[in-house]
Image (tube, rainbow, N blue to C red; front, side, top):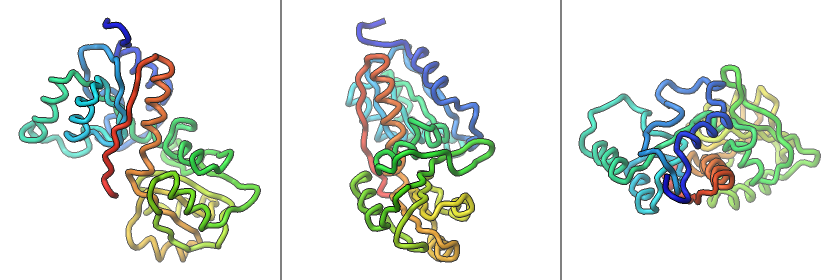
Length: 257
């Protein structure tokens, strides 16, 4: 094992114990866990939201041999490994890069999860589990002792995410019970309202949710699918770096969505 490196299987075991993916019923093709092996050791971690040819090339340029990602390689129907798909797997092999992916487990984790980390970035204080999904939860809810103005909350999101959120003003001018479920949960805002929040933060949603927000009497803030899901991979990579003494970097490749 090279100096300054950690066995890949040791890192994977730690991640599996920490994130408990077996507790989540994810999409069939999410394939949570180790998706691609390397030769067995890790000396630099690259965290990113999406595993694509572009981010694999960024990881190789950064000298990483493990990618920690939220959206892995196997979302669509399996297709022949030709063209850009071939270039992707060839780049992984030539650069000896492993890929470790967690989807819903890295949304709903109470400490490392996207929602929990975003709540911390928004300075919302203590949070509790929120947004039930097939026996577990995918988000967090903050119950504020002192309400915050909706416009102030939007300003905090701008600072935390690096861009202004889209605000659907279906509720009141102040927010007291704020639910967060990152990514593409906008179509489920009725569930958020049913769980008792007056304000729902997620990444994106369809056009018709503007009218639905008014009908449900709930404020909705869309911060961007990509932007709201940068937090979990960063938190996991930082924890791995601290525990195992290997450096990490974040590969920022925004989708604009």
